[in-house]
Length: 265
Image 1 (cartoon, one colour):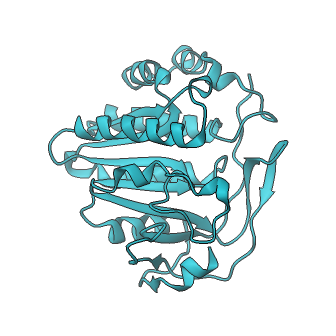
Image 2 (tube, rainbow, N blue to C red):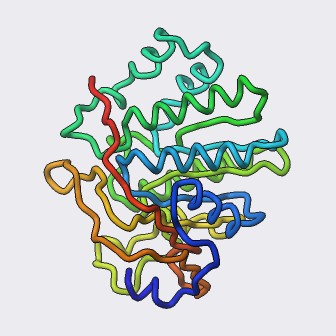
């Protein structure tokens, strides 16, 4: 990781807040229509970052779609919720699937009230006339044998969703930071040397963003699932990578991450 960051070149916009990080991403991603964010799961700040990006990208009626690391079996419920009034019954219906019923000390952080708030924000944006949508692209855990099988399947689903976009539309994808790697780190352990989801999509207008933080915690599964602490870093500018074998197009740093409010059954 450190070697990859040192090899990059610093961009001009310093980190200071979630909004500042969103500005960095919008500026650096430019006209790329597939913006992939590699995150640490289970934080309060990353859903806010995605919310900011979706609001910015959907201004002036520009069509934007959000891809979430949720099973595609959730897509019908997501679509119904975006069309709903967002009342208590609609919110309860969104959380009835087995995916949302996993207990806090057993799941990997993709389920949180912060993520539900992000989905609600998209519903409100649609109500305001914005052309936004959301869909999952993951597969059920029981349907794959290896991580590479899962990454390949997710890439296939994302490609299908990208190809179905309205003309000129942009797609923002939120995923775990390993799935977002264009190429694995040169010194990665053998279990991380497999082809990642992003590596199957390099022929698309992909811009891969590693979302880091200067300090804080996220929710991860290291047997058991729990809050994990990040190594503290000094303030730094975004790090842009240009090597053909780069892992990401840019590394950005939020000021801090904190564990989100994880959902209960």
